[in-house]
Image (cartoon, rainbow, N blue to C red; front, side):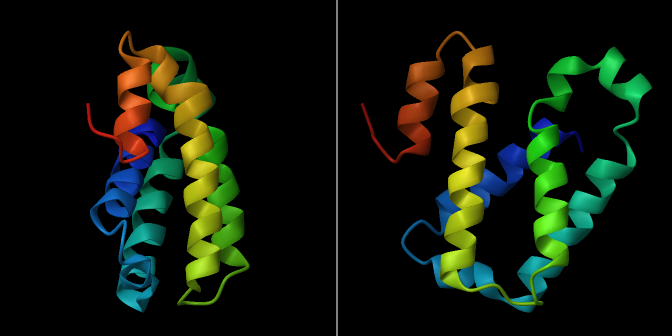
Length: 115
């Protein structure tokens, strides 16, 4: 899984439980989040980044999240999840969505707007 794929995976989790953020606070969910993240960061060598630069959108977020998760207990609070979601949303706004021709539409979807 690339950093970009991880960002999509995690954003999907937030979007699926938009009105039920506490469901992401379980220990099992956080364990899965950590396990996926460790796979992402194990395969982002400089050679990989040079060969697949588009796949590395969101790499700085993944590195930030790894440090953030180290400082967090096994079950984060809803407020802490909101911090992750806000930071992840900024990755989509500044890195991922602009790489697509329909970036405005994608942002609307992430924001829960329907056209």
